[in-house]
Image (cartoon, rainbow, N blue to C red; front, side, top):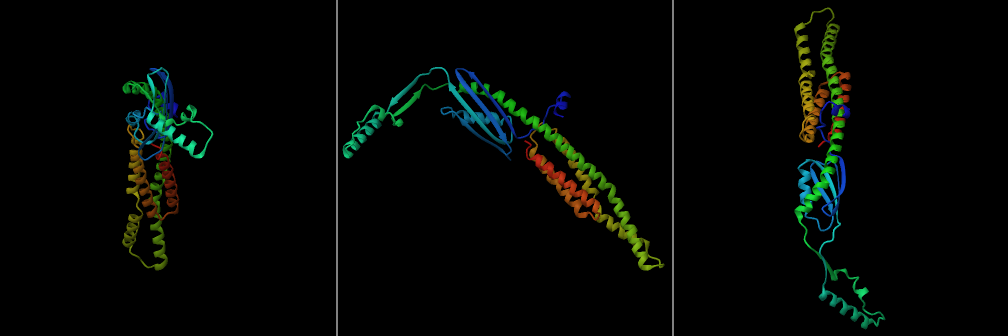
Length: 304
């Protein structure tokens, strides 16, 4: 089905919230690996793992990704390896080192220990050393990262669109099935009223025998019954909801929440039809409608 959509020149507008994309490349003396994945979420939630020293990229990545997707729990992995030599200085904290030496000598003398304080022993205390490198051009780094991230994000969005096209097809198939059931209900409802009129007349004749009865009273009772079981307002609203659904699934905007609300309204109409039903056939049909609506609702949870 998806192939047919693309062959017809249509784009898969509906998006799923699940997706994955990855890319790695060497840009500007840095080997950059970028990975993005997302799952369902009510809102946009962003988390990232970025190479130490490049945490300033987190907010830039969040804004860049949020400009292209609106919902989902997004996880990003970014690794940056510097390939070119840069000005790096390793500085010694002499005050701290002196403190360690004094403390170690004190331990040696107090406990009569045989070992001497050595360079190899001191080097184990990493907090004595601090590494300083020349500051990098943050904008240049961001531009390099963006170049690597962009293909991965395109792949990620494309995956969401493919899944969205499948969701669209499935939702519309289920919607079509519901409408066909609504057609049957609209056919059966008048028959229910006619059956009630005949049963009522038969009971009155059985009770009164040959005595004449008020035909107008029968018609009044039938009219009251018909009003109680009438579901034309509900079926009209259901059809309207499904028309709106068809429009929403072809929208180029995020519509997940709107469709979710629409599905709630569909379920409300189905419940009303069920509560008015005195016909077992219609009651079973309402169960089928609610089952299909629930399936649509489950699919909608994955729509952006």
